[in-house]
Length: 253
Image 1 (cartoon, rainbow, N blue to C red):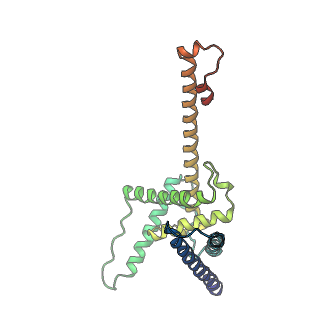
Image 2: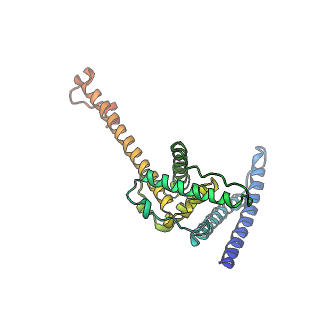
Image 3: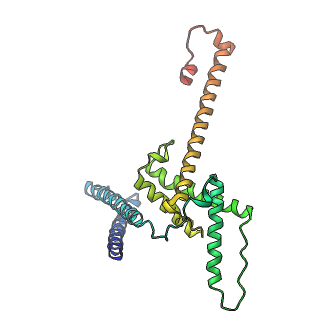
């Protein structure tokens, strides 16, 4: 596994060096074009610039693919997945599951702190997270889910309305692991969940919320258009025109 990781890292570094060289060439071309009194750009210069842009875009896509493949190849690289949804989690709704998970992670942090206490000194007490603390941490997790959805997934799938279940599983794995990585950086080790159930649930909820918002906005837009149409049809000026269609009415319809 270490040999594979080394190979992948070397590939990424080589690509990043190539990207840096191409970007430097682009900056040089842009510097040449910045002077408005400079001679006209030759066809050869334009061709070089276009080719550099194409190569840069291709290399960036390759680098992104390599990074995604490296991340999803080893789902346990953030840490072992040990927290299942069985046992205490059964019969609970999503918010209750998040709360229970957060309490478990909080207790793990407490145990880790206890190991650092010198022998003979008293251990710190285990104080469960308060309702306020749980609410804040849940909102933080949901915000991270929306961040991944809006800034990463929307770039890959720009449609306003989309279903989580229709995203290819390999892509879903990458999005979930990216979310777990963001959460870990913030001290929330949801990567310990088996089958990434917490990250999966957060992203599924974000999709559902976005689709509901989209449907609501479309319904409001359609209602507004109907109200405008009804208003135009019922106005005195419209009643005197008989069967002649108003240009405004034609635009609305």
